[in-house]
Image 1: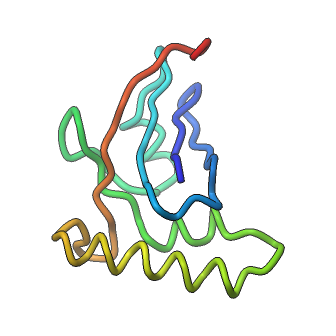
Image 2: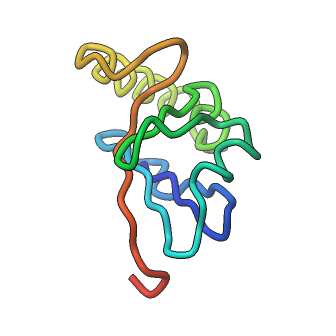
Length: 102
């Protein structure tokens, strides 16, 4: 699953891929502003953000077979928790930057 910051808004892509979680900030976009505006989370530093688990669940849950997806989503969060990446209802994600043409 990818959280994409495009023009200061958040978009979820690859929501079916629950084996990876990252944030991509497209050049010219402001991750901190987008996270604050959507109340989805906050920046920890230049390389990491904390994203609300409830936000991810609500934004990425598919309309087809949501129960199976939810089971796999909970497994992803449990793995992140086992690595120390979950705190206060949020999960830590790595941030990368790319140009709009990538």
